[in-house]
Image 1 (cartoon, rainbow, N blue to C red):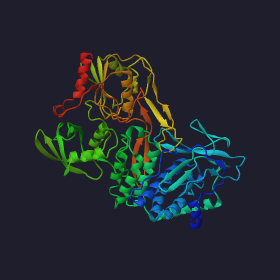
Image 2: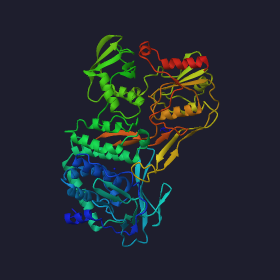
Image 3: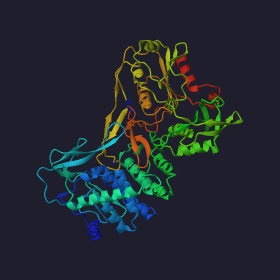
Image 4: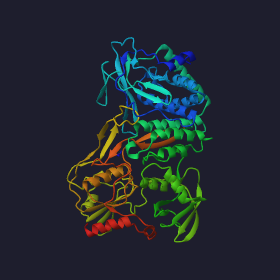
Length: 606
């Protein structure tokens, strides 16, 4: 991560379905948008599920790529919920096609949804002399959001999106979804500030659609006891990742297959109780370490006053604010639940690399939203101990690494300093910097999230340092098309004199994620010091914020990060030059084998 830093009459509709929607434009189709990436969909044994799947895919194409005025003027989250409601009322293919057209034609009058493919011409009566072209530009604004904007050309000849030039009729999305053929233009003409293609009738239908949506929401709540909301959550989130997630090549998931699977699983729920669990399972397959546990944003997290780590196939206490719970104690039960079984369940529902899953599952093993105390069962060298402990509100310190031994700059041995990167430091303070400049060696704590730590790196070299590449997808075509180009950007660090000359060793593990991995990637590439411990999380690239209807909120990785040499970083991370794992014996004895190894390297001058 770089420095901190939304009726037609049935007989008429039947004609639309059988043939093609009559449009007012007259040019041939040009290039298509990734038309071969989705083939005819298999039957999943559930007609309603299949219809919801077709609705979902059509929804994503129009929401993110169709530039009509109406598309810009609809609440797409609410439309997903209402659309699910309408599709669930259909009983056969004929009713389904009518419903699709009733839902989408008022928003996108120039599209085609039919049981037959569209012919290869779009008819237009006349192009106004003042007409221009318009497209949707989806881009990452580096402030935790993907932005959907319409762009316009200076004239009607061509339009440029991300330095790629298109003409009217190019980049049309044509798909066969089961027995349904869709054709969605991504470029429209606009005149006098309005897109062309709508009619008096379609404008009336758009008003009627919005009124019908208002009536629905006046009678139905947006919460997870509403099954329409639960299914809409699957549809909205699936489409977001389908078009914008940058790591499908790395994780190898059949994301197309996840849509019918989780529509079906969500549809089985009788109430909203397991909504979060289903969503966690769905997103776990993306293997994205930035995807946190999805929770109702109205609920506050509470935490047990201990920290645990998965060591030697056991859950081991590595930090405790309870006098009667000691480092090295093995956690057996939390209340009546087997701690290891619950931990593995959390691992399975967590997104990210294996090392990242273990770190985060350990964290969430001691988190609750609705308890105030519990009983812990622990094994201390063969002796079973039971103790009641409270859940406490989470403090800022709870988010910091429990590996750290010291808050400030500390001399561990003569000439060997420990620098905790998780803490802010006065880099401009002369006295502080003199300690670093005169040290024989410096051990940098990087088993957590650093605070403005790049000034330290600038003292380790006399040459310019460049971060690894952060790549933004330039969205020309849907369905995470391989042809979509990447725009690379990063940041540069200028050296600061005088340089630190002592031996520097970085201690790290999978607690290091995102910005911490940017730091460690620079260390790795420029060989700024030995790296002791375990691999980092393997998750980097600015996060995107997402809030779904009903209250689920989470982040995901919006930029594709690769290492300096062009190799894969995602799910691999920065590897230690000196691999050292902590042991139960070491934790019980109050030792930190990784820190000890770092001290040894400096003392031996390795």
